[in-house]
Image (cartoon, rainbow, N blue to C red; front, top):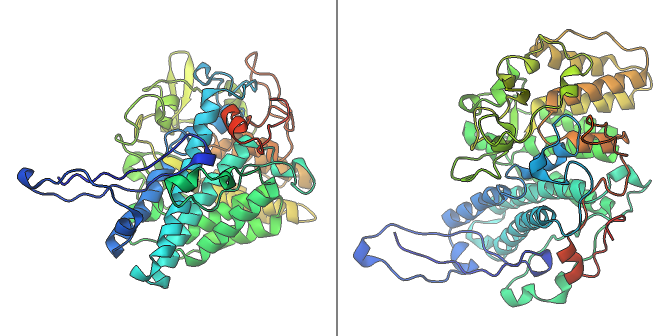
Length: 483
Protein backbone atom coordinates (compact mmCIF):
# COMPACT_ATOMS: atom_id res chain seq x y z
CA UNK A 1 0.00 0.00 0.00
CA UNK A 2 1.32 3.43 -0.82
CA UNK A 3 1.37 5.40 2.40
CA UNK A 4 -0.12 8.86 2.21
CA UNK A 5 -0.27 11.01 5.29
CA UNK A 6 -2.81 13.80 5.58
CA UNK A 7 -1.68 16.41 8.08
CA UNK A 8 -4.15 18.27 10.23
CA UNK A 9 -4.28 20.49 13.27
CA UNK A 10 -7.18 19.92 15.66
CA UNK A 11 -7.94 21.16 19.14
CA UNK A 12 -10.90 19.89 21.19
CA UNK A 13 -12.65 23.27 21.08
CA UNK A 14 -14.58 24.76 18.20
CA UNK A 15 -12.64 28.03 18.34
CA UNK A 16 -9.51 26.20 17.25
CA UNK A 17 -11.01 23.61 14.92
CA UNK A 18 -9.02 22.72 11.84
CA UNK A 19 -9.05 19.24 10.36
CA UNK A 20 -8.97 17.13 7.26
CA UNK A 21 -11.32 14.72 5.55
CA UNK A 22 -9.78 11.62 4.08
CA UNK A 23 -6.75 9.46 3.56
CA UNK A 24 -6.26 8.14 0.06
CA UNK A 25 -3.95 5.32 -0.93
CA UNK A 26 -3.28 2.95 -3.79
CA UNK A 27 -1.79 -0.52 -3.78
CA UNK A 28 1.80 -1.10 -4.90
CA UNK A 29 4.64 -3.55 -4.42
CA UNK A 30 6.56 -3.35 -1.18
CA UNK A 31 9.72 -2.16 -2.95
CA UNK A 32 7.77 0.66 -4.60
CA UNK A 33 6.32 2.14 -1.41
CA UNK A 34 6.63 5.88 -1.14
CA UNK A 35 7.31 7.75 2.11
CA UNK A 36 4.55 9.59 3.91
CA UNK A 37 3.60 12.77 2.06
CA UNK A 38 1.21 15.53 2.93
CA UNK A 39 -1.93 15.93 0.85
CA UNK A 40 -3.73 19.22 0.56
CA UNK A 41 -7.31 19.92 -0.50
CA UNK A 42 -6.13 20.60 -4.05
CA UNK A 43 -5.09 16.94 -4.24
CA UNK A 44 -8.25 15.56 -2.63
CA UNK A 45 -10.67 17.57 -4.78
CA UNK A 46 -8.92 17.21 -8.14
CA UNK A 47 -10.93 14.34 -9.68
CA UNK A 48 -14.62 13.37 -9.62
CA UNK A 49 -13.76 10.04 -7.97
CA UNK A 50 -11.84 11.69 -5.16
CA UNK A 51 -14.59 14.23 -4.59
CA UNK A 52 -17.08 11.39 -4.29
CA UNK A 53 -14.84 9.69 -1.70
CA UNK A 54 -14.61 12.96 0.20
CA UNK A 55 -18.41 13.09 0.22
CA UNK A 56 -18.47 9.60 1.73
CA UNK A 57 -16.29 11.06 4.47
CA UNK A 58 -19.28 13.14 5.59
CA UNK A 59 -20.98 9.98 6.80
CA UNK A 60 -17.82 8.85 8.52
CA UNK A 61 -17.96 12.19 10.36
CA UNK A 62 -21.54 11.45 11.43
CA UNK A 63 -20.23 8.28 13.06
CA UNK A 64 -18.28 10.32 15.63
CA UNK A 65 -18.08 8.04 18.64
CA UNK A 66 -18.86 10.83 21.10
CA UNK A 67 -21.95 12.10 19.29
CA UNK A 68 -24.04 10.61 16.49
CA UNK A 69 -22.23 7.30 16.57
CA UNK A 70 -24.96 6.53 19.11
CA UNK A 71 -24.09 8.53 22.19
CA UNK A 72 -26.23 11.61 21.40
CA UNK A 73 -29.37 9.47 21.27
CA UNK A 74 -28.43 7.78 24.54
CA UNK A 75 -27.89 11.12 26.29
CA UNK A 76 -31.34 12.35 25.24
CA UNK A 77 -33.02 9.17 26.40
CA UNK A 78 -31.05 9.12 29.65
CA UNK A 79 -32.69 12.47 30.37
CA UNK A 80 -36.08 11.21 29.26
CA UNK A 81 -38.17 8.70 31.17
CA UNK A 82 -38.48 5.32 29.48
CA UNK A 83 -34.87 4.18 29.87
CA UNK A 84 -33.51 3.32 33.29
CA UNK A 85 -31.07 5.60 35.10
CA UNK A 86 -27.67 4.17 34.13
CA UNK A 87 -24.85 4.62 36.65
CA UNK A 88 -22.34 4.47 33.79
CA UNK A 89 -23.48 7.90 32.59
CA UNK A 90 -22.92 9.54 35.96
CA UNK A 91 -24.86 12.78 36.46
CA UNK A 92 -26.31 12.88 32.93
CA UNK A 93 -29.60 11.11 33.80
CA UNK A 94 -29.93 12.84 37.18
CA UNK A 95 -29.70 16.45 35.97
CA UNK A 96 -26.81 17.50 38.18
CA UNK A 97 -23.95 17.86 35.71
CA UNK A 98 -20.95 20.10 36.23
CA UNK A 99 -19.59 22.22 33.40
CA UNK A 100 -16.18 20.53 33.66
CA UNK A 101 -17.69 17.07 33.09
CA UNK A 102 -15.54 15.19 30.55
CA UNK A 103 -18.56 13.84 28.65
CA UNK A 104 -20.00 17.35 28.27
CA UNK A 105 -16.79 18.41 26.50
CA UNK A 106 -16.39 15.21 24.49
CA UNK A 107 -19.92 15.40 23.04
CA UNK A 108 -19.55 19.11 22.20
CA UNK A 109 -16.21 18.45 20.51
CA UNK A 110 -17.59 15.46 18.61
CA UNK A 111 -20.56 17.43 17.31
CA UNK A 112 -18.50 20.40 16.18
CA UNK A 113 -15.96 18.14 14.56
CA UNK A 114 -18.77 16.72 12.41
CA UNK A 115 -20.01 20.23 11.62
CA UNK A 116 -16.48 21.30 10.75
CA UNK A 117 -16.11 18.37 8.35
CA UNK A 118 -19.29 19.42 6.52
CA UNK A 119 -18.20 23.07 6.34
CA UNK A 120 -14.66 22.20 5.25
CA UNK A 121 -15.96 19.85 2.57
CA UNK A 122 -18.27 22.52 1.14
CA UNK A 123 -15.57 25.18 1.16
CA UNK A 124 -13.13 23.00 -0.75
CA UNK A 125 -15.77 21.73 -3.13
CA UNK A 126 -16.68 25.31 -3.95
CA UNK A 127 -13.03 26.09 -4.70
CA UNK A 128 -12.85 23.08 -7.03
CA UNK A 129 -16.38 22.97 -8.40
CA UNK A 130 -15.18 23.10 -12.01
CA UNK A 131 -13.87 19.54 -11.62
CA UNK A 132 -17.41 18.12 -11.61
CA UNK A 133 -19.65 21.02 -12.63
CA UNK A 134 -22.38 22.88 -10.77
CA UNK A 135 -25.10 20.24 -11.20
CA UNK A 136 -23.09 17.42 -9.68
CA UNK A 137 -21.74 19.71 -6.97
CA UNK A 138 -25.26 20.70 -5.89
CA UNK A 139 -25.95 17.14 -4.76
CA UNK A 140 -22.78 17.04 -2.66
CA UNK A 141 -23.59 20.40 -1.10
CA UNK A 142 -27.02 19.01 -0.25
CA UNK A 143 -25.48 16.00 1.50
CA UNK A 144 -23.16 18.23 3.53
CA UNK A 145 -26.02 20.52 4.52
CA UNK A 146 -28.12 17.56 5.62
CA UNK A 147 -25.28 16.25 7.81
CA UNK A 148 -24.72 19.72 9.29
CA UNK A 149 -28.43 20.25 9.98
CA UNK A 150 -28.79 16.84 11.60
CA UNK A 151 -25.85 17.52 13.92
CA UNK A 152 -27.03 21.01 14.85
CA UNK A 153 -30.48 19.58 15.67
CA UNK A 154 -29.14 17.24 18.33
CA UNK A 155 -26.55 19.74 19.53
CA UNK A 156 -29.03 22.57 20.20
CA UNK A 157 -31.45 20.17 21.89
CA UNK A 158 -28.78 18.96 24.30
CA UNK A 159 -27.04 22.24 25.17
CA UNK A 160 -29.92 24.75 25.08
CA UNK A 161 -33.45 25.15 26.33
CA UNK A 162 -36.13 23.97 23.92
CA UNK A 163 -37.45 26.25 21.16
CA UNK A 164 -40.59 27.27 23.07
CA UNK A 165 -38.71 28.30 26.22
CA UNK A 166 -39.18 31.94 25.17
CA UNK A 167 -42.00 33.24 23.00
CA UNK A 168 -39.65 34.16 20.13
CA UNK A 169 -36.93 31.54 20.78
CA UNK A 170 -34.49 34.37 21.46
CA UNK A 171 -32.72 32.55 24.29
CA UNK A 172 -29.12 31.35 23.83
CA UNK A 173 -28.56 28.35 21.60
CA UNK A 174 -25.16 27.19 20.37
CA UNK A 175 -22.48 28.84 18.20
CA UNK A 176 -23.61 28.76 14.60
CA UNK A 177 -20.48 27.69 12.75
CA UNK A 178 -21.33 27.49 9.05
CA UNK A 179 -17.88 28.17 7.56
CA UNK A 180 -14.51 26.56 8.26
CA UNK A 181 -10.93 27.75 8.81
CA UNK A 182 -8.85 27.56 5.65
CA UNK A 183 -5.56 26.68 7.31
CA UNK A 184 -3.95 25.85 10.63
CA UNK A 185 -2.98 29.46 11.09
CA UNK A 186 -6.46 30.68 10.24
CA UNK A 187 -7.92 28.36 12.90
CA UNK A 188 -6.29 30.47 15.61
CA UNK A 189 -7.82 33.71 14.38
CA UNK A 190 -10.06 35.33 17.05
CA UNK A 191 -12.88 35.51 14.49
CA UNK A 192 -13.60 31.82 15.20
CA UNK A 193 -14.47 32.57 18.82
CA UNK A 194 -18.14 32.71 18.01
CA UNK A 195 -20.85 33.74 20.48
CA UNK A 196 -23.94 31.63 20.98
CA UNK A 197 -26.60 32.21 18.35
CA UNK A 198 -30.19 32.31 19.54
CA UNK A 199 -32.17 29.08 19.38
CA UNK A 200 -34.29 30.61 16.63
CA UNK A 201 -31.21 31.43 14.57
CA UNK A 202 -29.98 27.86 14.93
CA UNK A 203 -33.34 26.44 13.87
CA UNK A 204 -33.59 28.89 10.98
CA UNK A 205 -30.25 27.55 9.74
CA UNK A 206 -31.35 23.94 10.21
CA UNK A 207 -34.54 24.61 8.24
CA UNK A 208 -32.64 26.42 5.49
CA UNK A 209 -30.09 23.60 5.21
CA UNK A 210 -32.78 20.93 5.06
CA UNK A 211 -34.89 22.89 2.58
CA UNK A 212 -31.85 23.31 0.32
CA UNK A 213 -30.97 19.64 0.74
CA UNK A 214 -34.48 18.44 -0.08
CA UNK A 215 -34.42 20.42 -3.32
CA UNK A 216 -31.21 18.83 -4.64
CA UNK A 217 -30.97 15.35 -3.13
CA UNK A 218 -32.15 12.30 -5.09
CA UNK A 219 -35.07 10.15 -4.02
CA UNK A 220 -32.75 7.15 -3.89
CA UNK A 221 -29.14 6.20 -4.61
CA UNK A 222 -29.75 3.07 -6.69
CA UNK A 223 -29.06 0.61 -3.90
CA UNK A 224 -31.00 -0.35 -0.80
CA UNK A 225 -27.97 0.18 1.44
CA UNK A 226 -27.10 3.65 0.17
CA UNK A 227 -30.70 4.83 0.08
CA UNK A 228 -31.04 4.07 3.80
CA UNK A 229 -27.64 5.38 4.89
CA UNK A 230 -27.07 8.37 2.60
CA UNK A 231 -29.08 11.58 2.59
CA UNK A 232 -32.15 11.61 0.32
CA UNK A 233 -35.14 13.85 -0.31
CA UNK A 234 -37.13 11.66 2.04
CA UNK A 235 -34.55 12.04 4.80
CA UNK A 236 -34.40 15.83 4.44
CA UNK A 237 -38.17 16.22 4.37
CA UNK A 238 -38.65 13.75 7.20
CA UNK A 239 -36.23 15.64 9.41
CA UNK A 240 -37.96 18.88 8.44
CA UNK A 241 -41.27 17.46 9.68
CA UNK A 242 -39.61 16.76 13.05
CA UNK A 243 -37.97 20.18 13.23
CA UNK A 244 -41.25 21.96 12.47
CA UNK A 245 -42.90 20.07 15.33
CA UNK A 246 -40.28 21.45 17.71
CA UNK A 247 -40.83 25.00 16.42
CA UNK A 248 -44.61 24.63 16.62
CA UNK A 249 -45.15 25.19 12.90
CA UNK A 250 -47.88 22.60 12.49
CA UNK A 251 -48.82 23.32 8.85
CA UNK A 252 -45.21 23.00 7.71
CA UNK A 253 -44.73 19.82 9.76
CA UNK A 254 -47.78 18.36 8.03
CA UNK A 255 -46.59 19.46 4.57
CA UNK A 256 -43.09 18.05 5.06
CA UNK A 257 -44.53 14.74 6.24
CA UNK A 258 -46.78 14.64 3.17
CA UNK A 259 -43.76 15.01 0.90
CA UNK A 260 -42.25 11.91 2.49
CA UNK A 261 -45.50 9.97 2.27
CA UNK A 262 -45.79 10.86 -1.43
CA UNK A 263 -42.17 9.95 -2.20
CA UNK A 264 -41.64 7.64 -5.18
CA UNK A 265 -39.36 5.67 -2.88
CA UNK A 266 -42.55 4.16 -1.43
CA UNK A 267 -41.80 4.37 2.26
CA UNK A 268 -44.17 2.27 4.32
CA UNK A 269 -44.51 0.60 7.69
CA UNK A 270 -42.68 -2.69 7.99
CA UNK A 271 -44.92 -5.72 8.48
CA UNK A 272 -43.29 -6.21 11.88
CA UNK A 273 -41.63 -3.41 13.87
CA UNK A 274 -38.62 -5.62 14.59
CA UNK A 275 -37.63 -5.57 10.91
CA UNK A 276 -36.25 -2.08 11.51
CA UNK A 277 -33.84 -3.36 14.17
CA UNK A 278 -32.89 -6.76 12.78
CA UNK A 279 -29.61 -6.49 10.89
CA UNK A 280 -30.58 -8.99 8.13
CA UNK A 281 -33.60 -6.80 7.26
CA UNK A 282 -32.01 -3.34 7.57
CA UNK A 283 -31.84 -3.08 3.78
CA UNK A 284 -35.21 -4.61 2.97
CA UNK A 285 -37.58 -2.89 5.36
CA UNK A 286 -39.54 -0.11 3.62
CA UNK A 287 -39.66 1.84 6.87
CA UNK A 288 -36.07 3.00 7.39
CA UNK A 289 -35.58 6.42 5.81
CA UNK A 290 -32.16 7.30 7.20
CA UNK A 291 -29.86 5.56 9.64
CA UNK A 292 -26.18 6.06 10.44
CA UNK A 293 -24.60 2.83 9.30
CA UNK A 294 -22.13 1.22 11.69
CA UNK A 295 -20.05 -1.93 11.71
CA UNK A 296 -17.79 -3.63 14.21
CA UNK A 297 -14.80 -1.60 13.01
CA UNK A 298 -16.63 1.66 13.67
CA UNK A 299 -17.16 0.69 17.32
CA UNK A 300 -14.19 -1.48 18.31
CA UNK A 301 -14.57 -1.00 22.08
CA UNK A 302 -17.29 -1.40 24.68
CA UNK A 303 -17.99 2.22 25.50
CA UNK A 304 -19.58 3.90 22.47
CA UNK A 305 -21.71 1.53 20.41
CA UNK A 306 -25.39 2.09 21.11
CA UNK A 307 -25.93 -1.68 21.28
CA UNK A 308 -23.28 -2.09 23.95
CA UNK A 309 -25.24 0.07 26.39
CA UNK A 310 -28.75 -1.15 25.56
CA UNK A 311 -28.05 -4.82 24.93
CA UNK A 312 -28.07 -7.46 27.69
CA UNK A 313 -25.32 -9.11 25.62
CA UNK A 314 -23.07 -6.06 25.94
CA UNK A 315 -22.42 -3.72 28.86
CA UNK A 316 -26.15 -3.84 29.62
CA UNK A 317 -26.01 -0.40 31.24
CA UNK A 318 -29.50 0.69 30.16
CA UNK A 319 -32.55 -1.39 30.91
CA UNK A 320 -36.19 -0.41 30.47
CA UNK A 321 -37.87 1.71 33.12
CA UNK A 322 -40.76 -0.53 34.29
CA UNK A 323 -43.14 2.43 33.91
CA UNK A 324 -42.64 2.25 30.13
CA UNK A 325 -44.19 -1.20 30.02
CA UNK A 326 -47.25 0.13 31.85
CA UNK A 327 -48.00 3.01 29.47
CA UNK A 328 -51.68 3.41 28.49
CA UNK A 329 -52.80 1.48 25.42
CA UNK A 330 -49.68 -0.73 25.55
CA UNK A 331 -51.12 -4.21 25.88
CA UNK A 332 -49.06 -7.31 26.57
CA UNK A 333 -49.96 -8.64 23.10
CA UNK A 334 -48.56 -5.58 21.28
CA UNK A 335 -45.70 -6.64 18.96
CA UNK A 336 -43.62 -3.80 20.37
CA UNK A 337 -43.78 -5.49 23.78
CA UNK A 338 -43.22 -9.15 22.91
CA UNK A 339 -40.89 -11.41 20.94
CA UNK A 340 -37.56 -9.95 19.84
CA UNK A 341 -38.58 -6.41 20.80
CA UNK A 342 -38.21 -7.14 24.52
CA UNK A 343 -35.46 -9.16 26.21
CA UNK A 344 -35.46 -10.26 29.85
CA UNK A 345 -32.12 -10.91 31.50
CA UNK A 346 -32.02 -11.68 35.21
CA UNK A 347 -34.05 -9.08 37.08
CA UNK A 348 -34.05 -6.57 34.22
CA UNK A 349 -35.93 -6.06 30.98
CA UNK A 350 -34.12 -4.60 27.96
CA UNK A 351 -35.22 -3.23 24.62
CA UNK A 352 -34.65 -5.69 21.81
CA UNK A 353 -33.90 -2.91 19.32
CA UNK A 354 -30.15 -3.40 19.80
CA UNK A 355 -29.97 -6.73 21.63
CA UNK A 356 -28.52 -8.82 18.77
CA UNK A 357 -26.23 -6.13 17.34
CA UNK A 358 -24.02 -5.29 20.28
CA UNK A 359 -21.29 -3.57 18.24
CA UNK A 360 -22.83 -2.92 14.86
CA UNK A 361 -26.36 -1.57 15.32
CA UNK A 362 -27.17 1.12 12.82
CA UNK A 363 -27.98 4.31 14.69
CA UNK A 364 -31.72 4.92 14.09
CA UNK A 365 -32.37 8.47 12.95
CA UNK A 366 -35.55 8.50 10.88
CA UNK A 367 -38.19 5.99 9.93
CA UNK A 368 -41.61 6.17 8.35
CA UNK A 369 -43.45 5.52 11.61
CA UNK A 370 -42.07 8.76 13.02
CA UNK A 371 -43.10 10.72 9.94
CA UNK A 372 -46.66 9.38 10.32
CA UNK A 373 -46.64 10.32 14.00
CA UNK A 374 -45.37 13.80 13.10
CA UNK A 375 -48.24 14.21 10.66
CA UNK A 376 -50.80 12.92 13.16
CA UNK A 377 -49.67 15.39 15.81
CA UNK A 378 -49.63 18.28 13.35
CA UNK A 379 -53.16 17.45 12.19
CA UNK A 380 -54.42 17.11 15.76
CA UNK A 381 -53.06 20.54 16.63
CA UNK A 382 -54.21 22.26 13.40
CA UNK A 383 -57.77 20.95 13.50
CA UNK A 384 -60.19 23.03 15.53
CA UNK A 385 -62.02 19.89 16.58
CA UNK A 386 -60.96 16.27 17.01
CA UNK A 387 -59.17 15.02 13.89
CA UNK A 388 -60.36 11.65 12.63
CA UNK A 389 -57.49 11.61 10.13
CA UNK A 390 -54.96 11.93 12.94
CA UNK A 391 -56.56 9.03 14.79
CA UNK A 392 -56.60 6.94 11.61
CA UNK A 393 -52.83 7.39 11.31
CA UNK A 394 -52.30 6.28 14.89
CA UNK A 395 -54.46 3.24 14.32
CA UNK A 396 -52.47 2.41 11.17
CA UNK A 397 -49.32 2.25 13.29
CA UNK A 398 -51.06 0.26 16.01
CA UNK A 399 -52.60 -2.16 13.53
CA UNK A 400 -49.20 -3.26 12.21
CA UNK A 401 -48.25 -4.15 15.81
CA UNK A 402 -51.49 -6.07 16.47
CA UNK A 403 -52.46 -3.42 19.01
CA UNK A 404 -56.11 -2.68 19.64
CA UNK A 405 -57.49 0.16 17.52
CA UNK A 406 -58.48 3.22 19.51
CA UNK A 407 -61.78 5.12 19.40
CA UNK A 408 -61.91 8.84 18.68
CA UNK A 409 -61.29 10.75 21.92
CA UNK A 410 -63.83 13.25 23.15
CA UNK A 411 -61.55 16.28 23.00
CA UNK A 412 -58.71 17.71 20.99
CA UNK A 413 -56.35 17.63 23.97
CA UNK A 414 -57.21 14.01 24.66
CA UNK A 415 -56.26 13.17 21.08
CA UNK A 416 -52.95 15.04 21.41
CA UNK A 417 -52.24 13.17 24.66
CA UNK A 418 -53.00 9.89 22.92
CA UNK A 419 -50.57 10.74 20.09
CA UNK A 420 -47.79 11.74 22.48
CA UNK A 421 -48.28 8.45 24.33
CA UNK A 422 -48.08 6.55 21.06
CA UNK A 423 -44.81 8.35 20.26
CA UNK A 424 -43.38 7.08 23.54
CA UNK A 425 -44.43 3.52 22.77
CA UNK A 426 -43.18 3.54 19.19
CA UNK A 427 -40.01 5.67 19.38
CA UNK A 428 -38.60 4.71 22.77
CA UNK A 429 -34.81 4.26 22.97
CA UNK A 430 -34.27 6.09 19.67
CA UNK A 431 -33.30 9.52 21.01
CA UNK A 432 -36.69 11.20 21.48
CA UNK A 433 -37.17 10.97 25.25
CA UNK A 434 -36.15 14.34 26.66
CA UNK A 435 -36.88 16.27 23.45
CA UNK A 436 -40.51 15.17 23.21
CA UNK A 437 -41.17 16.12 26.83
CA UNK A 438 -39.61 19.57 26.79
CA UNK A 439 -40.85 20.64 23.34
CA UNK A 440 -44.40 20.00 24.55
CA UNK A 441 -43.70 21.76 27.87
CA UNK A 442 -44.31 18.65 29.95
CA UNK A 443 -42.21 17.90 32.98
CA UNK A 444 -40.08 14.77 32.72
CA UNK A 445 -41.66 12.18 35.05
CA UNK A 446 -39.78 10.74 37.99
CA UNK A 447 -38.04 7.39 37.71
CA UNK A 448 -38.71 5.81 41.07
CA UNK A 449 -36.23 6.78 43.76
CA UNK A 450 -33.46 7.31 41.22
CA UNK A 451 -34.62 10.60 39.67
CA UNK A 452 -37.37 12.98 40.82
CA UNK A 453 -39.65 14.78 38.38
CA UNK A 454 -37.70 17.31 36.33
CA UNK A 455 -39.29 20.60 35.26
CA UNK A 456 -39.20 20.96 31.48
CA UNK A 457 -37.81 24.51 31.77
CA UNK A 458 -35.52 24.03 34.76
CA UNK A 459 -32.07 25.62 34.45
CA UNK A 460 -30.42 22.22 34.64
CA UNK A 461 -32.56 20.49 32.01
CA UNK A 462 -30.12 21.39 29.21
CA UNK A 463 -26.45 20.51 29.57
CA UNK A 464 -23.89 23.15 30.54
CA UNK A 465 -21.61 24.67 27.93
CA UNK A 466 -18.23 22.96 28.48
CA UNK A 467 -16.08 24.86 30.99
CA UNK A 468 -13.06 24.66 28.69
CA UNK A 469 -15.03 26.38 25.94
CA UNK A 470 -16.24 29.23 28.12
CA UNK A 471 -12.71 29.79 29.40
CA UNK A 472 -11.15 29.98 25.94
CA UNK A 473 -14.07 31.85 24.39
CA UNK A 474 -15.46 34.38 26.87
CA UNK A 475 -18.17 35.47 24.40
CA UNK A 476 -19.97 32.13 24.78
CA UNK A 477 -21.69 32.58 28.09
CA UNK A 478 -22.78 29.73 30.36
CA UNK A 479 -26.28 28.32 30.81
CA UNK A 480 -27.93 29.63 34.00
CA UNK A 481 -27.40 27.37 36.98
CA UNK A 482 -23.94 26.24 35.89
CA UNK A 483 -21.98 29.40 36.72
